[in-house]
Image (cartoon, rainbow, N blue to C red; front, side):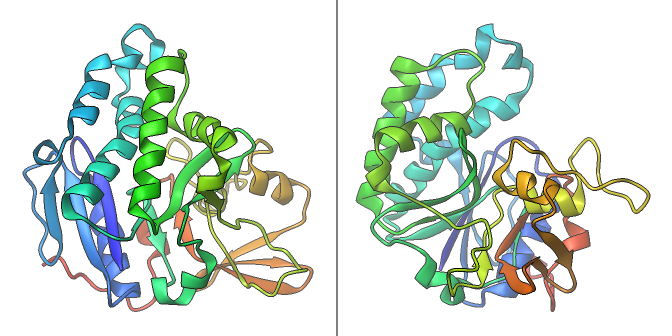
Length: 282
């Protein structure tokens, strides 16, 4: 499977753990690391963002949306917004028929072949965070044409309807509400009425286990859960028990559901490495 990781700016050390974890878990992985850095990793394909930018992407970049907002001092917001365009440019340039993409602080625990049946090959598969946001905790693109259409529509929304203090997660949800037939929202919560035993993490399981970037979890602290997340609300209402023992899983009504991925906002990925972890980048 093709895995696409995108990161702009200085490359933090934890990204090597993301890349190594992919290769540890999925022996058939082909990784494309897309950045604007001169740093090159071994055993993966390194691609410079500046070499693949389409005219559409360059136009969106030039609009500099956050210039007059309080967000202009934090590059995270614009890079997160631009990521969907970089993703589309890479897929188009390399003519990739399918690909998995997630944030650079995500660890996976299942190879694509184990979870292939969970994806709709004709749609853009992505994790919902709450009723207002979709997030790249895990995403799968099985149809290049459909994804290109989604990005064109996303471009129109960004260009014509963009409002101050809006992030890409809300814009994606806005697009989902308008073009839901192109989206497949991945299952993030246990469902006892279904036979499936896997769930995906948009952000909440990883934040519960590892804390946040500003407040990483320590044994003497209370674990974090937010009621503005679908998963967080269930945790607060004591509907779920989340554990990490060699891999992450959820317990609900005495049934075990394995978590496909963890979105580690604390950036302490080393605490959640998959079994058999190896360094493939040396």
